Image (cartoon, rainbow, N blue to C red; front, side, top):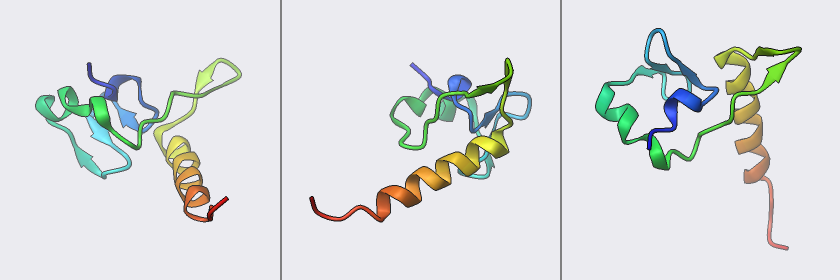
Length: 71
């Protein structure tokens, strides 16, 4: 099951992934079930955020996980 169409980093009209900065082929989209950078589409006032806004949230999330040390 592909995750790309449900991901906030994916721009459907261009089949473009904002994280990888490339156009995805249909086979890439089908193989996206294990993508580590998947982010649910977030909404503000009923409108979905842009892929660029999702990219900023995901970069912040990845950076915060790098700073965690042993517990």
